[in-house]
Image (cartoon, rainbow, N blue to C red):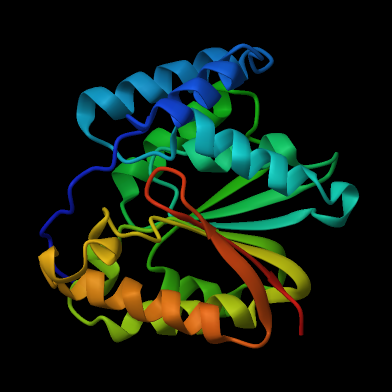
Length: 236
């Protein structure tokens, strides 16, 4: 693993269409205490440069998770950070649903646990601290997997790890389950062509995108929201 950092993708896009959509999302506040905690997390993330998916993408993830109703009860969240995505996922689940969230950084995991507890979601979210490659093989199968890891930490030393994580995730995803991957554009690098710096993590994400697009067992598309959000259903 290496410690070089990627540019932080902002929570909110400068695209006028996304600004408008985000404003509409904010007109429907979340229930308390979830709403207050989410607002605090968004401010902390901005102030400290912590990557979170933001209000618009969070609402998209929540809506897509909830579309299948009671069919989604087991969710794997790969990359907790401070728990922002985990809260959106947990909020979408029916009674008895559970999110298992994996975080490499123990400090961030502890902060996430505090936010999750104060949001009233501690009974719906379990945080596992450690490397996803070590933890996932010990876990069961899930109805939905959301991947939002620190790509420079996981793929920076070896771009092939991106496709390996894809294979590992697939092995733990139920048929008809959904797979979501944040930062499919890798800070915009995958769409910048030759102008992009060819970092290891960028090569890894490009290879992962190609592998997922070509996998006959998946039917999916990248939503061009923020830094790109993969939405794929496992068909076989």
